[in-house]
Image (tube, rainbow, N blue to C red; front, top):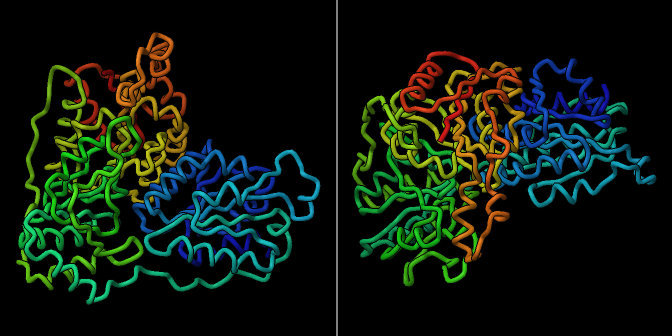
Length: 514
C-alpha cells in the first residue's frame, strides 16, 4: 500500500466518501488509488472553483466533509473564491492538494508555489505531509480538524513522493470535536439580562437555524416577544410551512440601521453583530442602534441548539412556539415575466423538502417572498459574497441529498464564473433544476456605482456592467454541456417549464429573460 492508498482508506474510514476532483500530474498516484478504494466516490469537475463550491454545498447538506483533489498551488488558487464562501459558511471540508516531490522542491520548477500561503487565509488547519508513513495519520487529523465545530476547511498538502512511497496502512478515525456546551451560568446571565427589556432580537446562525433550534427560539419569542433574525447570507436555513419563520437582515447599511432601530437587546446565537458589507461615504459601517445591549448566548463553536433550549427553560416559556409559517398555495402566474412571477411559480410547484441554492442576487426578492409559505425546504445562500457559487453549491447539495429536488437560483453574471458545474451535473445525472435570471447585466454594480458616490459615469464605465454584447445564450451553453435547456419570456412559459421540471429527474436549465 502506498501513501495515496493509505490516505484514501483513511478518509473513507473517517466518513469522507466523496471527492470532487480536478487533478494533475502530482496527483496521479491518488487518482490511480481510487480504483482500490471502492467506498470513495470520485466526481470530476472541469474547474477547481466548481470542485470547492460543490464540496461546500455537499458539506452544508451532508453535515460532514467532502474532499477536494486540487493540483498544486495554481489549482488551489483557482478554487479560493468558493473556499472563501465555504469558510464563511463554517462548512466542513478537506482539501487534498498535490505538490512536487519533496526532493524536487530545491529546483524551483515552473509550477512550484507557496501552497500553504495560498491555503492559510481560507483554512482553519494546514499541514504538509513529510513522509508516506505519516500520510494516513495526517489524513485522520485533517478530517478531525474539518469537523471541529462549527466546521472549517482543512488543507492537506500531499507531495508526490509521499503519495507513491510505501506506507504502513490506513489510520483509525479520531474523536469528533463536537460543539461545546454553554454553561448554566451563562444561560442564567442571559435570562437576567433580558429581564425588563421589551424590544429584543435573537440573531441566529449555524445548526440552530434547523427546525429544533428554530422551535426553541420560537418558544422564547412566545414568552418575550423577541424578533427572530438570521444573517443576510445564512449558510443553511430551514424555512417554509410548518417552520418557525425568521427575519433576514437586509443587505444595505441604511436598511440594516432601519431594521434594527429601537432594539434594546440583541442576543447572538452563533453569529455576530451585523455590519455594512462595504464602506460608503456618509453611511455607517456599524449598524447597531446606540444603547442596545449585545448578549452572546452561544459562540460559533458552541452548541446553539442546546443554548436556546436551556434559555427557553430558564425563562419558563410556553411549549408551543410562535411564528410558525402557514402553508399558502400560490396561484400559477401569467403574463409579465419578472422576479416576482418567477418566485410565485417556484412557490406553487416547489416540492416538499426541496433545497434552494440561491445566488439570484438582485433577482431573488420574489422567490424569497413567495417561498416563505411554500412547502418546507432548506435555503442555502452566498455566504462570503464571492459570486460564482450558486451552480456548484447546488451540484454538491444534490450529491449529498440525491432523494431531494435541488433548485439553483442563479444570476447570469455570477453563473458565468462556474458554468462548468452543469457538465458535472450531466455526468453524474444530478437532480438539479437551474433557473438563470438573465438580466444581461451585473445589476448590483449599477446600484453600487451610485451608492459609493462615483459620479459622472459614462458609456465606458457603464459598459463594464453590461452583458449584452454579445448576448449570452444559456440554453446553448447548457446543451453544450449535456443539460437540457429552455428559454422563456413569459410567466406562463416559465410556470409550464418549471412545473414540468419538478415532475422529472435529472439536470435541467431554464433561462428567464428579464
